[in-house]
Image (cartoon, rainbow, N blue to C red; front, side):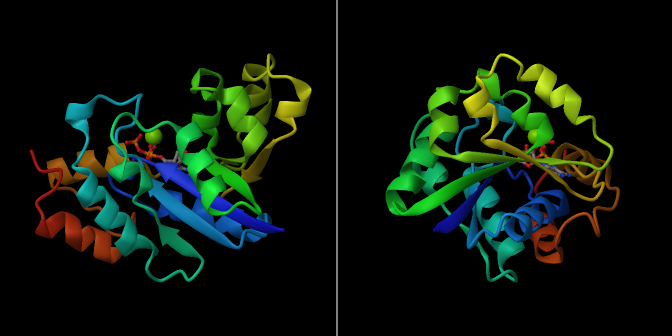
Length: 201
Ligand code: ATP
Ligand code: MG
């Protein structure tokens, strides 16, 4: 059976943390491909603080260009209204009816899973891969998910990724203060940010 990974995120901007997590998941779980899906309107982030979807989409394309297993989908960016993971996974399942879908997220995001729209249905139609840093207390994750029925818990896998304390928030902050972002994200993305004057005050 084919296995499709979905890497969802705001990607404002995309960085090596996202790429390392996606590549680790691809290898460990034998995924045939990983589809990066920039969120159109993340339900949990205020609209005004988010960079235009077309910039985030283009930066994501630049970042994945050198990995033949990676591709980008404009599905969420083109869909009007807030971007709910359940709608996205359902759409991917329709596009790949004979594939298993694995949704890759950071362990910080998976902790919030109980607050996601239709999370029970979501967990019944896809698997989750939670990327944790080595030494991260996974007990904490299971403690948070204690109310989840056992058969749904079994659909969440954990994966260790090298300690990458990289975040988009930090990168935006650095750009606004004129500090370097080199080596935190792929060079073409860095060039794109500079050419388009993103994240300056
Ligand atoms: P922001 O700081 O704006 O929230 P972010 O760096 O957390 O940005 P997102 O686009 O919010 O990036 O994250 C998309 C997904 O990637 C989430 O599931 C998040 O947990 C995961 N992620 C983000 N940074 C890392 C990292 N350094 N290592 C592993 N996973 C990460
Ligand atoms: Mg985040």
